[in-house]
Length: 122
Picture 1 (tube, one colour):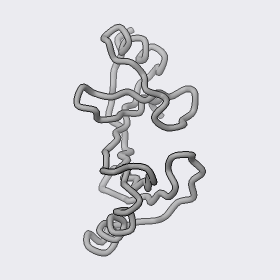
Picture 2 (cartoon, helix red, strand yellow):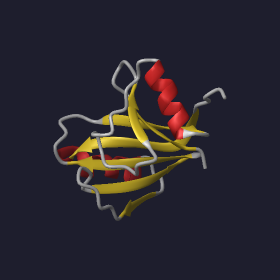
Picture 3 (cartoon, rainbow, N blue to C red):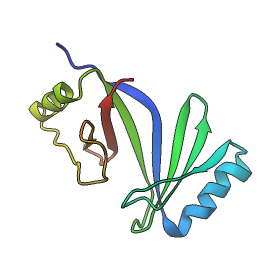
Picture 4 (cartoon, rainbow, N blue to C red):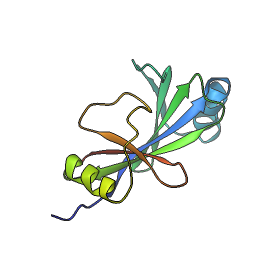
């Protein structure tokens, strides 16, 4: 079976604590997008806001120990373990230490450092 990757609807922007409120305000007050704070219990993300962004959802994640923002993307696959095996065969290692996620998902990065979550297609 050939592994097929498909972009998901979720995009996360990891934002340093000192820029978080300004960033949320930008999306809500300047761009006038639909922004809603969501409860979160995560050891690395202290707050999160969901932003409706066309057919996508942008998650504004407050990360207390970051010095600059990062954008993280979603990849959907029919079989996570097959995709992980394919990636390892192509010298792409998982980076699950980045942030706690369910065991059936994995973090990877591209050569430039962009982070992707690899998850089962809905």
